[in-house]
Amino acid sequence: MSSLGWGGLSVLLLLLLLDRASPTFISLNHGMRVMKGSSAFLSEDDLKFAIPKGEKDACKVEVVMNEPITQRVGKLMPQVFDCHFLPNEVRYVHNGCPILDEDTVKLRLYRFTETDTFTETFTLRVYLMEPDCNIIRMSSNVLEVSEFYGLSRAIDKNLLRFDYERTAGLECTVRLDPLRTRLPAHGHMVVVEPRPEGPRGDQPHSFFPQSRQEEFLGPGE
Image 1 (cartoon, rainbow, N blue to C red):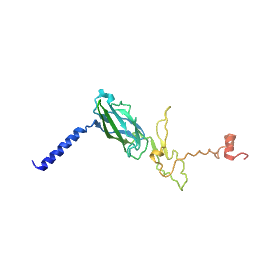
Image 2 (cartoon, helix red, strand yellow):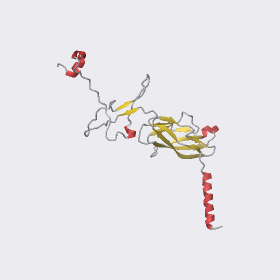
Image 3 (spheres, rainbow, N blue to C red):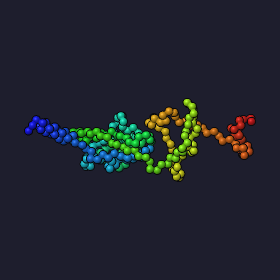
Image 4 (cartoon, one colour):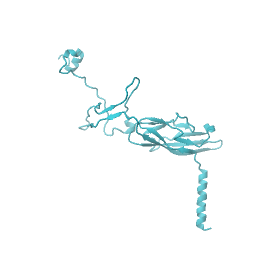
């Protein structure tokens, strides 16, 4: 056999030994799908490990924190969970940032035996989907700020509204998270107290209480 043939055989044996020395404990890793601005639970259809269920206490998974380009727009919780996690135990929460369509979570598996501890580091992809029921209705009007340090006109239903069935006990809130999303990028949102509505020309002053008339006219007028 030529020296080239022996070299190829040595490389093949080395690859086989490396493969046998580094087994993977992951049997399935399809990633998970989460609606933007919402949350979803991790299931065995997303991630599954080749660990017998009878050895429940012998395998743990840790979410690796403070890793660059991971968990940029959401978080997987809890930080440590069992390899045989329950259907409603492990959850990814999206923070509402609309920019990215995909996120990555870095995980580290710990496999414990009576004599050794094995670890395996891997990533879980999170596919961020647009909400099925879009309740946001935006008009074609543009919100403009005419000067530096100026204010735009108020954001009202002519610019933005939320179309949903209003029933008792149902709440709809809007949350801003500039620290995570870095938005708005060139300004910030402010809340301005609405001006009291003045009397119309077709309404007599007696229609308004005395206290309201003083607000409009000033005391003594």
